[in-house]
Image (cartoon, rainbow over all chains, first blue to last red; front, side, top):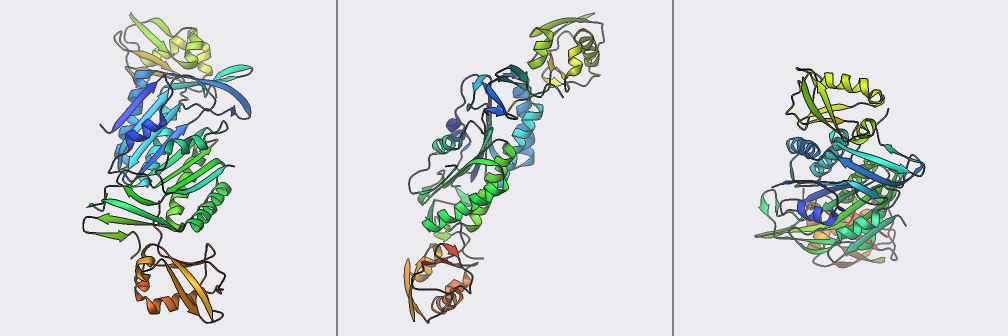
Amino acid sequence: MDTQVKILSEPLDVGACIDWVMSPQSGGIDVFIGTVRNATKGRPVLKLEFEAYIPMAISEINKIIQQTLELWPVQKVLVHHRIGVLQVGEVPVIIAVSAAHRDAAFEACRYIIDTLKQTVPIWKKEFFEDGEVWVAAHP
Amino acid sequence: MDTQVKILSEPLDVGACIDWVMSPQSGGIDVFIGTVRNATKGRPVLKLEFEAYIPMAISEINKIIQQTLELWPVQKVLVHHRIGVLQVGEVPVIIAVSAAHRDAAFEACRYIIDTLKQTVPIWKKEFFEDGEVWVAAHP
Amino acid sequence: MIKIEILAFGIAKDIFGASTLNVDLSDDSSAGDLKARLEQTYPRLKQLASYMVAVNNEYAQDTLPLTERDEIAIIPPVSGG
Amino acid sequence: MIKIEILAFGIAKDIFGASTLNVDLSDDSSAGDLKARLEQTYPRLKQLASYMVAVNNEYAQDTLPLTERDEIAIIPPVSGG
């Protein structure tokens, strides 16, 4: 099995994700790690909350991975997304891609995170000192 | 200190590298991990040996990082390169870049590995069943 | 008449004040009909940057007919990652 | 006359059969003069895809004059990463 998709309520394990995509056939691994930033447009962020429509989110992530496998010669692809409340510095998402050659790994990894942010039913709420906002909900 | 460059004879520690580039200001981290592939153009590779002209390699890597800091709004940049004998699956290089926004992290990380392979005085010897070759030495 | 249950996520949950909603629709109603009905009751839906209906874990065109056996969800603008 | 010590790496070490090499050059010799001298003694250098002289940890132009105090290295095609 060359792909792994999980939506988890526990903290993500970066090391385990990287170990999972490593293989003797691969020459390079690109890993994207999202982290909770302490501010949005200069406004301090206290924490984030992520919610997912889990079965559809997994299905949409798998679609993105299938597109990726058609577009680039990659070997193993892993996407882990966390849900629940995350503090500043915690990791909402890890995308790891191994490939024989690094160009494919970089391009596939970037395609996956860019597309995930556009199509996968996961929602982020930002908590500020004076309120909370579902990100991207309004124009 | 926002950059870290090391050339090491011991196994590289991916987790420690990632922890080092994380920061509350960063929203994304891109990490490139080179791994020793079991074959080159279909020919089985037994092991690799890396040699570096260490002071110049560090100086050239620092030049690349300075260029990167001028080109992209990145926060922390780490480059660790291993030297000595490496077995298949081991990690010769880790490049980790954190940034407020992921585009900068991806582009900077890719620029660093691409340029490192062109300018930094580090050499790789591939060991095959029937001989050994300094990579890229001959046309 | 068909009775459908709707799952709500993100800001849609806040707008409906509920994470599931039971709606009665006339026979042969489509995803587009559902949106029109919801927008009547919950005009704040129209202020969203966009929103989609998902049927059985797939984004649905407005023309897609709905049945009582479908799993139907309202998908406001996503913001994962 | 100047006496310089040369550091060799990668395949250059194999070609010289040594990791350092002491070479006597006439006064006012440049990096290019050093390359010409080495190629005379070690013609296999000319078969490399390319090679550079580094002086004090910087890639040197052929015109750069060499002194006895410089740290001088022969840099065959790099292949790190």
